[in-house]
Image (cartoon, rainbow, N blue to C red):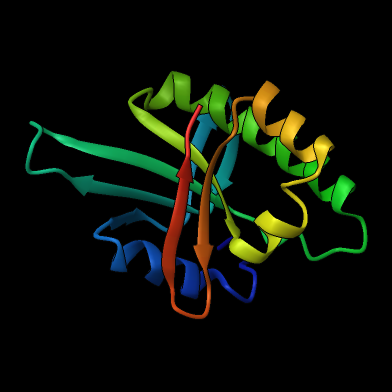
Length: 139
């Protein structure tokens, strides 16, 4: 099993409270002979549509002393995951899940905004204490 951060289960509950069904924990991605593990796979069945919406979520806390290093690492992971998803399950959308505090503190800076915009990173912003999603940003 992959190493989970201290807030993994809280973030999982946040998705479940929002009506998502967790289908994979972790979500295994295969790219050739390489295996990658995103944190969660989830589905939400929508009454207004046939079929459902599917997502893969990578959870990041950006808790290290170097947020830029964390951003670089996250961008690399997300790119690899996106490539694997395009091969394996292209109907799934990839999201980076971050707390509202991290969104305000880090993702409002110019470098983070450019990284999100130019790399077309979908963000899921949540409030950990209440375990609710406060914002979806898609590109």
